[in-house]
Structures are given as structure tokens and as C-alpha cells.
Image 1: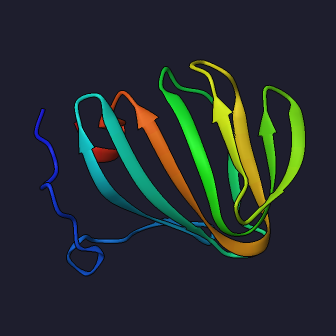
Image 2 (image 1 turned 90 degrees about the vertical axis):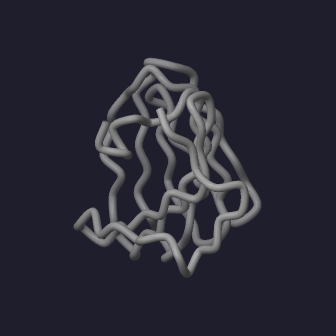
Image 3 (image 1 turned 90 degrees about the horizontal axis):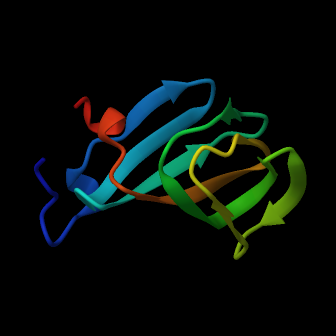
Length: 113
């Protein structure tokens, strides 16, 4: 597995349009860690799913109804949430915003691996 450069400049990293009002940018990674910035338009939904990665997400801006294991909470800028491996989770954007997702290990599926 490759890894990102030590210094990552946002204007040099592509932003991927995922559709449905969601875009993402992979900011840095190695085999064991990855940080991804995700923009949501109001009403955009990160559908309920699960994966084998541990995840911590920081709400940089906006408001989101976050579902972790069936429990739904409204989170705003400055809040964060943890998702254990294999736990179903998702989010619905209530006010346009940005999430910073941290994964361990790397999300190889995001890299096309």
C-alpha cells in the first residue's frame, strides 16, 4: 500500500463528487490511518452502512442527524462521534456542512484498491 505525502495541500488533492450532494477529499493516509473531508449539501444523506474500520468523525460545520447503531443524535460544529467496527451508521445533513472522517485502518475502497 502506498501512503500520502507528509504535507498535503488541499488545492492539489482532487475532490470526488459522490452524487446526492456529497463530495469528498482524501487528505492523508497510510496502511493504518486515513483522514477524509466530506462536504454535505442540506438534505444529503450518508446512507446507513457498516465496515470493518474504526471511525471517528469531527463535525467541522453544519448540523447532522447521526445514526450510530440505531441511536440518532443531532450534532453540530465542534461535536464528534465514534463508530466501532461493524456497527451500522449513517448521517442526514440538516444544515449544509463538513465532516472530517478518520478511519483505522485505511479505507482501501476509497483508493480504488
